[in-house]
Length: 109
Image 1: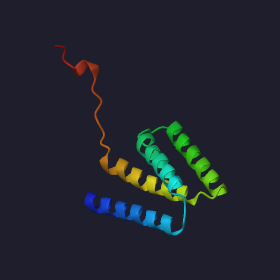
Image 2: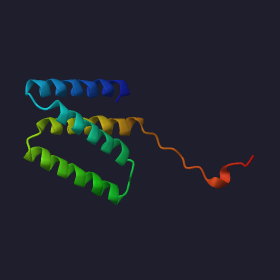
Image 3: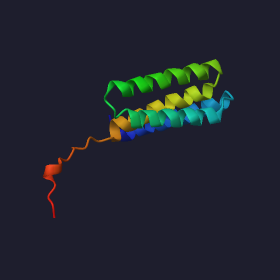
């Protein structure tokens, strides 16, 4: 898919979520906390390809959703879903793999 089209879709989802949030009188602070938390989790921890990274992400996700549903912070759930969508898209389409440089390949001056 075209990256421009995907950025348009992501912005439409974000704006519609904010409108839905305002119309249902949900917490904007919870939305922002969920958005920042899951955006950072997706972008920074998704680069780890080991079991521990997946364990940490899964544990934090389930605990977050448990406490937000228990205390009825629906804005935080909506923000976390937006953070996952935006962070996942950013990681998938913008993060490039860099080759590791060997110490022997660097010339000494």
